[in-house]
Length: 124
Image (cartoon, rainbow, N blue to C red):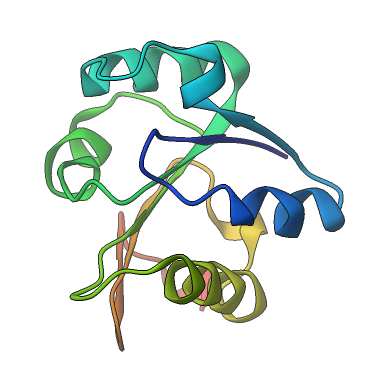
């Protein structure tokens, strides 16, 4: 699976994802820092990549309005830090699973998570 980190997502997640066999691009290195969200979405589509971001707009608007995407994970914490963001991604991988992400947008909060579109009964 391929991932694209937005410009504010901690780089520490790269070794986690690469360590379990995934590929990761960092928008800071291949995109234009300060680019509008649409630039991140376009690049993710071109690369068939899952977006990792801390920008809540990706859950509330972009993730719901995009006609097709490979998946989006938004980590939205009250007091974000590199360690806590990394632990939420690890929790997601262990408890939800990357195989469930295609076409969905997830928001990971401090003690809860949301998904759109929701899982149906066969996926629970």
